[in-house]
Length: 114
Image (cartoon, rainbow, N blue to C red; front, top):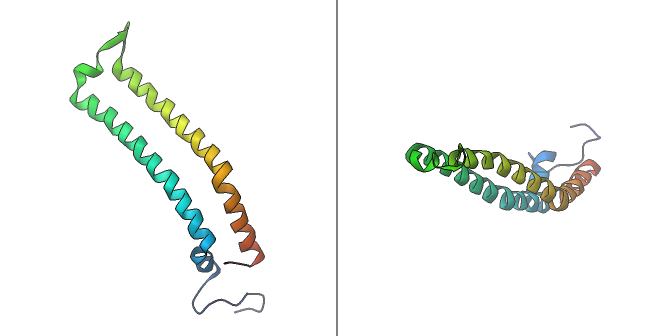
């Protein structure tokens, strides 16, 4: 070990110290509580579309306005929901996630981990 390295627990690296810190654990927990349910909802919505396409073609081919059918509308709503999820995540990250990540990065760069 060089002299400019801070003392580390036996076998621990700086990354392992950060990963074990309370602040990082809280950050990871908050991320998972937001992202996993949102991902689950989107996947359920997507698989519903696929299942309806495969097992309910008569329903999906029902015309709503002119030649526009339910399958086309639901397919386009897939794009809309993707953009909505992206905007929701970006707003949440700016407000809730990024300030904590910035504080954690400052701790890492200054050499102080909790």
